[in-house]
Image 1 (cartoon, one colour):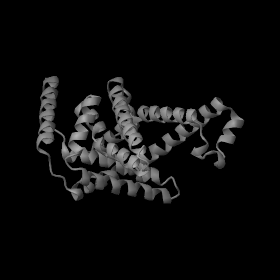
Image 2 (tube, one colour):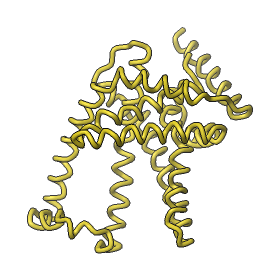
Image 3 (cartoon, helix red, strand yellow):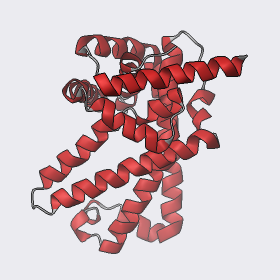
Image 4 (tube, one colour):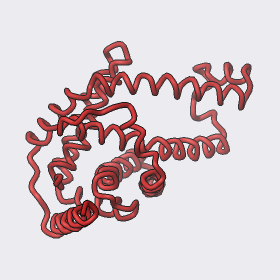
Length: 259
């Protein structure tokens, strides 16, 4: 019985999304932002404290790994300001850095999904826990989130690299920014609509391209709001950053919605 209902809801959702892809949709900046901000107020403290703990854990783990990889003395030398100039890095080091940062981004993509799920739970007044943030490390979701992040990263790097060859670095930056904007629905489509990675990325590109300026404005305001937190004892950004999670949720909810 439950499986039949879930199948019907899934079919209805797919039909709804296909209709949006074909006919487009209207989106109110004020409505979406208000939804995101009200949701943010419900998760800000809890999500901020959790981000603080995660940053401490990741920071300690990264320091230990680097210290054992290059040696304590070399690690201390590497962290000196004069040695952090990217112009001094070898091509081999930059290649390792690029692969490492891409892999790390893919590995933590389920965390973004977990925070978006937290925003959803808060919106429907459902109790949420720390376990909610890690629930998308289940293999069925993890592989799709990992692959979707990898696809977007490869496309972004490819486009920005080609544009950088023109000699205008800003073109590469805007190319990367465009891909990031077009892919904002990828994660919500995977966790809320059970889309596969390729389908989620393709659908996100299609839906976002219907209202790119409104969505760009929403994320620019969200990023600016998040950056403001940096000026409050630096760690303040951890408590303003959750607005981005709420924004991902609000955009998906406003465009596609929930049964």
